[in-house]
Length: 142
Image (tube, rainbow, N blue to C red; front, side):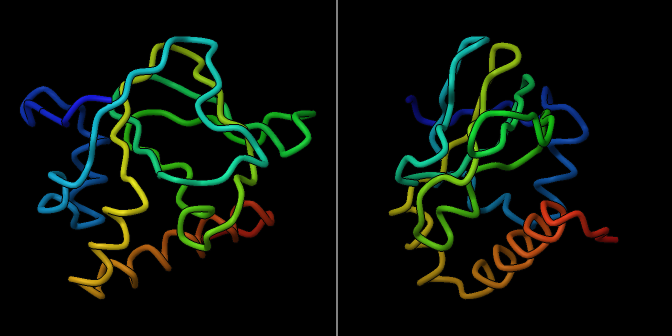
């Protein structure tokens, strides 16, 4: 991993919209940057969760815990790994890079520091996790 340095003028609209919607621009300094080559497993179901990810560039596929089916496709601005990080559990899915991935990585330590210094972060994460769980369960979230 390398420190996160982003030229905000070169990011795509979906990622900038995500930053604006989640109101996390002032937290960008807490993220590190990671690159994953196409075909590589980024997180594996059952592993301990130590970080959450935001896709800056590239695409990934999310597979069920048993690996038998693809349950989601992810692209720039999408978040993954937040459920296990938030609840302190093992990973509930496997994520594989469908193309070379440029990721922002939020470590557990940075996550916990953000929550302790700004409780509004916990509320936003709770909404994100609840939305993700509702979508996983097949519910529609508007």
